[in-house]
Image 1 (cartoon, rainbow, N blue to C red):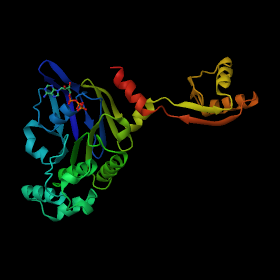
Image 2 (spheres, rainbow, N blue to C red; image 1 turned 90 degrees about the horizontal axis):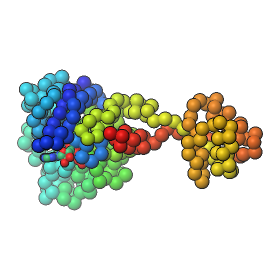
Image 3 (spheres, rainbow, N blue to C red; image 1 turned 90 degrees about the vertical axis):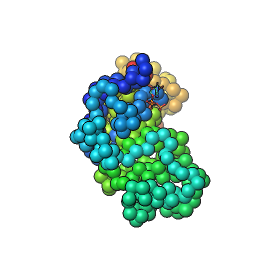
Length: 299
Ligand SMILES: Nc1ncnc2c1ncn2[C@@H]1O[C@H](COP(=O)(O)OP(=O)(O)OP(=O)(O)O)[C@@H](O)[C@H]1O
């Protein structure tokens, strides 16, 4: 595991904001760290970066204990918390050159990073004139300059438009796919990271509500069958009379819980044989966003 926390607990005054958190982040994963506002994501990230001191429990990164291997570990982590630390009066390239000089990194790497985050064309523009998405990408380029093995990003898609989100997603997928990095990314919106995350941890009020692969999360969402007919409400009543469970009906569709493809075929035949025209019949996974809300609201 790249990150392994064991019963991590953190208290501000009398408020425990991180509760017995045991996170496991596999190497090469994009780990989506999800939770509503105030769930304790930023606090956890600050603990992982040793910006807050561990009070209870333990943190291992790259199989090393964090406090006693601070420099060794942190030199291999690139991070972006809240706003990227960018000089707005300097160009994107100057920002990178500045940091490269400080870290004694060859200038060549600056151009490589500009290309990687698709900022070559805006390299000489002042960062103050960048869009939010461009600033986030510059922030990620700064975090990647030292070629760290692990990237920790706190809500990097916050406030971005759909294109900005797609650009960040593609960049992070490239980083894990081609460059074999591990990415730990927090968000309060599952939909924003669902398509890139390989693993997910969901927290609420500082507690871990779910942890596993994205497939394990998807498996939790129960499938249903969406049926469109010429007379939806009638058809729903007809199915109920025939002891078929109808979960939901609206003006356009009726929904029955999915059990098997044979049953789906059976329902289709039954409707057809009784004078209903079936326009469409589709198996659907429950919207993951609904599942996420259910997980975080039942706490
Ligand atoms: N320095 C602090 N002193 C006291 N309480 C704090 C401090 N920082 C955070 N908190 C509290 O800790 C809780 C968790 O905050 P945190 O920022 O970790 O949540 P979050 O999940 O990152 O939320 P958001 O998505 O809104 O950033 C909140 O109730 C917050 O008010």
